[in-house]
Image (cartoon, rainbow, N blue to C red; front, top):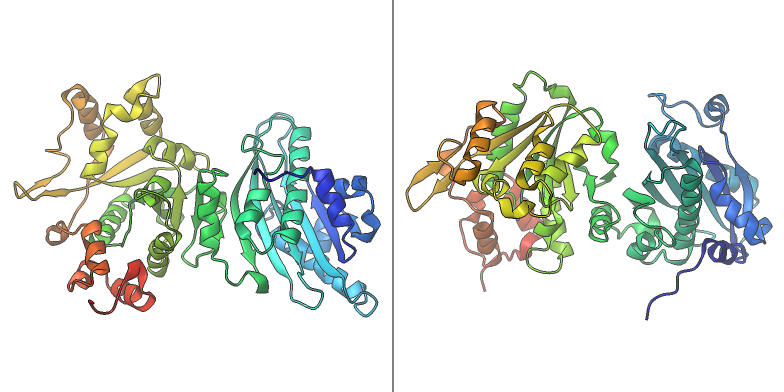
Length: 470
């Protein structure tokens, strides 16, 4: 049986009728769109302690302080608003008079589309809330993209999203996936997409925010998400805006010496490019959703095992729904027009030149390549060991279909595809074989992974590792 989806008015009324919920609303940039639902629903006097909008920048700075980078629609600003307003309600509402009240502070700061439609609407939204009157509060913060083409439409969608967030946190806090799912009640991805979510606090200590990132992509709420070495979810534009980007795609199940050799040699080649600024370079290890589900349903623990290793060696991870590289580059191009690099092995490059993957495009493979190489893109090719012939396959002897040979040679001539250095002694290492050795407790796998990775796998018992063979 399908679950009944409540309207924003029904959700707002249910919150208003809960006599123990009491909090503040601070909304900047898109009007008082969220709190308006609570005023219209009736009974708001028992729920809304204060509603405000410090719309003027000077007023906002005077209340919440200035941002060092001068921005207003950003995560740090949202956190300041939430902390300030939550502090006020706990300070001004006497607890001895209201012993059962559960306080909350809701806030958003939003930039809707402008009159000339030259910007993309987006916003930050969050809530600090108690589950019990005597408990420490929790925080849930999201970043969202607004896709509708009129300001009024974006304001309406923001209002619905805010009601959904507040309702989900109050009534579905025991199920973080349900919180995410309910954010899209009465909305769709054509109106709003959520590309970052964080849940922190005493009642969320068991939550791994990386799984929340995975869930956003899995449920098609966004096509790509990023989390950093510390495991915290990142808002993509915060780290990719006007950056050089170097990406490597793989299963990383587990990370092997080959993966590290690829990224090291690709990186060393990339930073020598004239248009690459080392200080403005973001390296990404990408895992696709299709890779995560290659054996059927996505195994969340398997995903976390991969993530644990990548985070432990200081890498930033991109989870995407982009099976085709041209879509990945479309994604990067939303944030930067700087030179980009992709590190590929020979098998992956051969796949790119297979026409069957582009039959859904009117222009076929030429349209896909136009999408890829109309950007400032370099492909860094890592060789492949042909064990049957005992030979190294690189850009000079890779097998490309004769019909596409001219296109391939054009890219080689223009240095769009570049061979990188490699360690010949490790070319016979394959992730799937290492994984099998780990699972079967076969000795010797430790020599096939980077330094310290073997310790991490053993200590955390990743990939079903067992200390001895039974």
